[in-house]
Structure formats: C-alpha cells, structure tokens
Image (cartoon, rainbow, N blue to C red; front, side, top):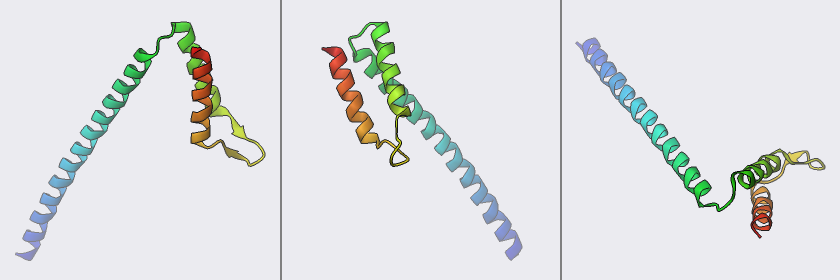
Length: 93
C-alpha cells in the first residue's frame, strides 16, 4: 500500500514538474519577445539614416571588444556604456 502511494505521489510530482517546465519555457519566450520589442522601439526612436545606424552599431560592437590590457580584465560594463553614450551624443550633434 505504501509503495502504491509513493508511486502515485511520484507521478503527481512528475506532472507538476512538467507543468513548471512548460511555464518556464513560456516565460522565457515572453521575455525574449519583450526584449525584442524594446530593441525595435529603441532603434525606431533613433533619428538616423541606415548608414548612421550601422555606424553606431559598429561602434557598440567595437566597445564590447575593448579590454583593459593592463588589468587583464574586460572593461566594466558601466564604463563601456558611458563611452557608448558619449560617442552616440557626439554622433547626433
């Protein structure tokens, strides 16, 4: 009898786990969709030609590749963001 109860409980736990996995997958999909919408909105809000936008994205990619050689570490994200903002502001002027 106890064995049967344990088997039933195990089956319920597996069903719940499957439901939670499906929920997590759906939340990941929703998050990706929301992030993509925010990216699209940000790109559309920039009043730049396609060429200028390509230049801006190229600068962002380049900033991600910059490392601080003396420390042997990547540049802190906040420093990268600051440089990107300055470059973007100069480009918009």
